Length: 198
Image 1 (cartoon, rainbow, N blue to C red):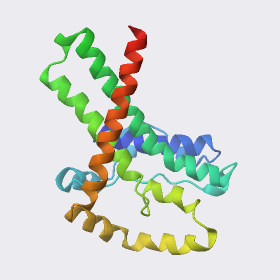
Image 2 (image 1 turned 60 degrees about the vertical axis):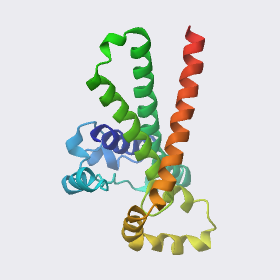
Image 3 (image 1 turned 120 degrees about the vertical axis):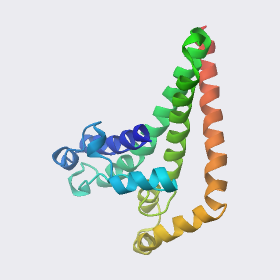
């Protein structure tokens, strides 16, 4: 959980700075130190209720060299970091099991596998186009300008909508198939890479 949350928020901060806004650096968010990114209540809720949050990275889109591009890339950076982390963890697990299987104890397998699962789920969840999730920031710049303000009005109801989705099979019907598809895609890519290496 810490790895998924910290890498996600750090990627947002890093991309915002790369796009020209130094607010995350000034706010102390350009670090992998969990203390800079973890919201205590949100983290406890994530452990207990499987629904929580981290401290959102603050940035000023007016400072971006290209505002639309900056906002989209900054939003996508978090989920992208989660997918990259999941892929690397899965690759490490496969390499260890193939070349040094004695190292892959039950604990090592569990930790690496949970890094894969948590990061895939976290990345997909944040791509849901519901304000204030990352997917909404991308969709905001895609929909016609005259409908954007109505779309962002959903944010006042987003918490209730997410709770409703969690209490019904809706959220699972979205996350589970996409997570399986992502995991399958990663497995295929790793198989191709190892086939090329060997």
